[in-house]
Length: 161
Length: 133
Image 1 (cartoon, rainbow over the protein chains, first blue to last red):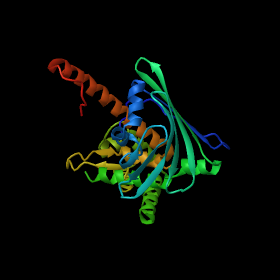
Image 2 (cartoon, rainbow over the protein chains, first blue to last red; image 1 turned 60 degrees about the vertical axis):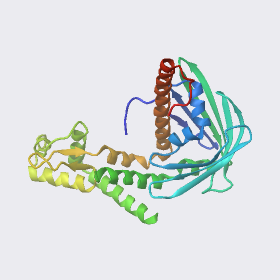
Image 3 (tube, rainbow over the protein chains, first blue to last red; image 1 turned 135 degrees about the horizontal axis):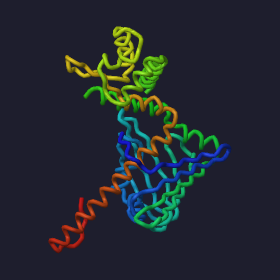
Image 4 (cartoon, rainbow over the protein chains, first blue to last red; image 1 turned 30 degrees about the vertical axis):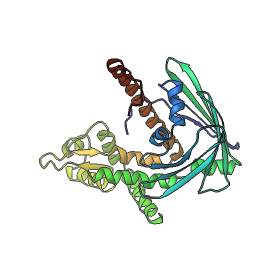
């Protein structure tokens, strides 16, 4: 993993509240950051964990549009996600539902604020609301095990060189 | 899935066992500043070269270090990725976000370069600014 000074991610999951707040700045203009969320061809290139393939079935990034995609990990396990884009304002705001198909009916509401910081920089703020604190905790802790497996798979590849 | 999980757990156990020794932790710390030969690694310790070799073997079988096939010196290298897996299980959620936003960084940087290159090219050829890939 390269360790050039990347902009830090701030993740806040307050105890006892079903929220997750994620904040991140980018050295790119707000229109480019927004486009990277709007265009499925771009989304595919960055969303999700390293080494996962993303197959996008639908991605209508517009008010009342829908989406579904499947992430495939290096072992071939598939994880599906889907939801609806509720409101979208170009270069400003998006709010969508989000459901991991491995936990059906646990639907979170995710809003994203795109903030133009000037000088070609952008701040992205995400706020997710889960149906319960338990659901939030499960999502945040989910994949702890797969993470380890995946880490070793990467290690195997590295050692096999 | 369960099998892979058990295997991963076992390797994680091995890595932590390997690091449950102050000499081996010193060796890892030294290697984090660059590769070194067994002789170089043995220097700071009051123990035999054999003992140091043993420690390196433990680290090697735990997947934390590798050794070059360079017959003469056989320097020992730290596997930084292996070290990363030791903390990965702590905060997977954060890690995923870190990874994906770094990928988004490079995508945005590539887009900047591409549009700069495209506008230069459009300038030269007098084309419509069309999609560049």
